[in-house]
Image 1 (cartoon, rainbow, N blue to C red):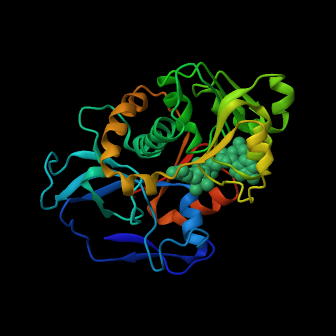
Image 2 (tube, rainbow, N blue to C red):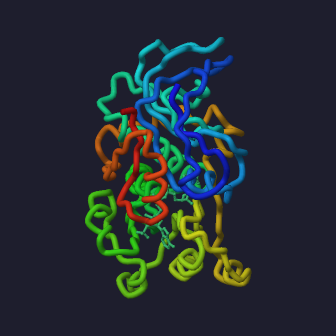
Length: 321
Ligand SMILES: NC(=O)c1ccc[n+]([C@@H]2O[C@H](COP(=O)([O-])OP(=O)(O)OC[C@H]3O[C@@H](n4cnc5c(N)ncnc54)[C@H](OP(=O)(O)O)[C@@H]3O)[C@@H](O)[C@H]2O)c1
């Protein structure tokens, strides 16, 4: 099979296009002929070794769409050729023409009218949104939610999912005016520039802040929370350290929670499928309408360069040539 291999931690130049032996599924797994591989900021951190969970050489890629190629021992409910998308896998291997995935984290697209590029861009992140909002933030009907980096790959999945769970108001922030239009196509009531947040919103306060950015932005957001509000930290796109005085939390009766879908699904693999079933219709209905940039698989390095340059609105997908 064809694969984009990270030969050592470092810049995007470390990618090598290689021919590797075809992988076969073990018990409880399927193999997938990959048509589309999602590229996210987490892949950049994994490639650099900032998140050193995989030792080089490895093939990055946590999420793919494609068709079932082989079915492993003990797996039922799939047929060869069936269109599928994976949730965020606990292993790498997606930047390839064939990959192997746990059947429990592989979701059938049969019967759904969803472009596989959108499916791989939106479904795993919608599952992350659903699990983090229901299992960690324990979101209630009527909540007022602030979402940072509103058109980022992960963040873009939150408004539709939060709305489906009964949010009464959803506000997004972006850093640059060029991202406002795309963000406003999502299910936000309002999208504002992060630097104008306090001025734009006046006295408005939120019961929940969803933050994939971290650092100073999260610290500033704590000022915008209602008593007993929670900040849900789901990423660190800013790569800044978190600097919050403990008194800020207890004096104001607010909390900071964290969620990582890979770790969660690793411990609770059976939670993936019901979560996917809860959000698939949102994706099919076009409610996670995120701009997609499609590049050939061989341009993985270029995809990473664009993500690092923050030169992207929406998501990048690698597709087979
Ligand atoms: N918790 C999980 O399970 C999970 C799952 C997937 C990803 N993640 C993490 O989530 C984060 C985002 O990943 P992604 O793939 O969505 O990335 P992405 O598509 O690049 O989106 C990141 C967004 O963050 C904003 N941003 C970036 N740098 C910033 C800065 N210095 N200050 C303020 N805003 C900044 C950008 O929006 P603006 O330019 O509009 O500000 C951008 O749209 C990463 O840390 C990733 O590791 C976590």
